[in-house]
Image (cartoon, rainbow, N blue to C red):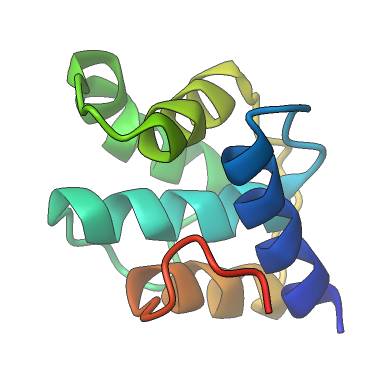
Length: 106
């Protein structure tokens, strides 16, 4: 259940261009989605700070035209991950990497 809520939350925030990321669950889904969009490869069990470090340069250099992608980048840049990590974060990261229904919360 947590995974679905985190996924939907990120998608809705990007579609509405509102709010901020509120936890590592959202961060992992969003980071997975960004990695998919940018062709970034990462180990599925990467820890939070390592994941942020891995994508940081691409986030800072991002200049896409899609408003949802731009907002996703803003969310990821602004978020400071905690050290918390569990299997659902791994699941969310993989979900983002393999997302087939971009920007659809249903």
